Image 1 (cartoon, rainbow, N blue to C red):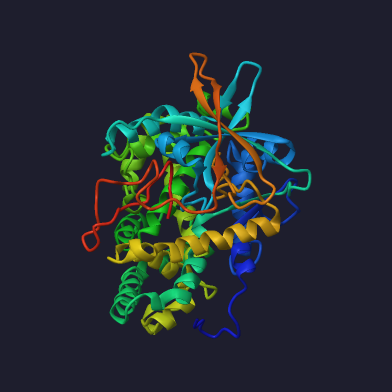
Image 2 (cartoon, one colour):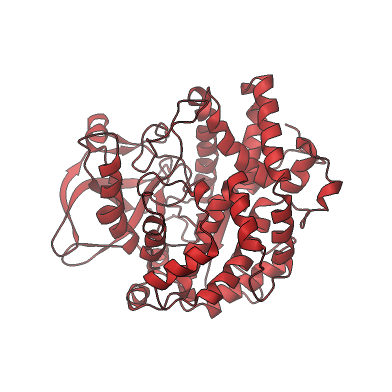
Length: 482
């Protein structure tokens, strides 16, 4: 593996640690929850202060119901929604998939009450809105949505810290894993892949330079060129659609003052319905097969829709905030340590040199482009399964049975299927008129540390095929994934 100017291969543990975020209370003076070191350390601390102390719902970033359960509960009740109960029960196994929670079983929290299990609002939306709409649009006729409740009992020695994975930080790992396995591709495929991703970055250099400049010294108002450049760039750099959506979701959850948001905040939950409505109502026809690589509504359209779904949002503030936040996330998550990048006319636009400045971005692009190769279904597991092995190893070393999506702790929680001391039981459940889930029947089920195939999964896009492959297109799911 050829890392430019590197004396040795980066340590995998350190790389996976960099892909995680630790949340803790209280926050030591002058230190944020992440990015405390590096060229943007000062900006990271400023963003942490801005989001936790200035945003109306900022305290939920470090104090929420999911975190409280992870800190202190002996047993957690988690909801997993499936359309393949017959397949699961026939084989007696539930397998994880790739995505923002990498190789874990995707779930959302449930809270036990004397009358039943109360759903986290994310779980409620998935079960009652999103999953049924997805199944209705599926090409697989006769499928039904089934809620599975997984009761996970935590051992005494389990790690009680709050460490979750941020899939936007996986670029360097994608790049490393590709370079370790690039000879699975033919010479022509390797050349095409490298040439394609470098060309995408080169033609997006104006946006990347602007984002880097704004990240280091954000302007107080929206930069007039930013929205147009962002929209243009998403077409070339699909990961920017994910960053855009995550920044917008974060803003809605943090800055909404609606009565519904306040009720959910009182029980320790971010309001997920706002970003879901923005996605599915603002972009009609996306339910069940959306692809965040195509998420690029202009700011004017976003403002108009925000006024409709939540009048408490200050749309002028939203535009300026999104400009600054997207710029920061782009620079911190996608660019290399030499940030901001040098003037583009000084870069030698070949792969090895571009890695110095855009390594994580190239990794994200490669991860997506690999799916477009005709032989991808035959060898995808060498990339996705090995990545899962790596993160399972990291989680087990750190004693983490329940990783969560730390892009923002909005209620997406996973089960590490390779955790050696995992104790659990699985139940089918029924949704009552009281809007609570009630356990129905315990089913024999084991969580298997083996990824489900790309053709399966509730939120996969079965409509489209890649022109070069005939394989499944987007990897959309109950929220965003890369």
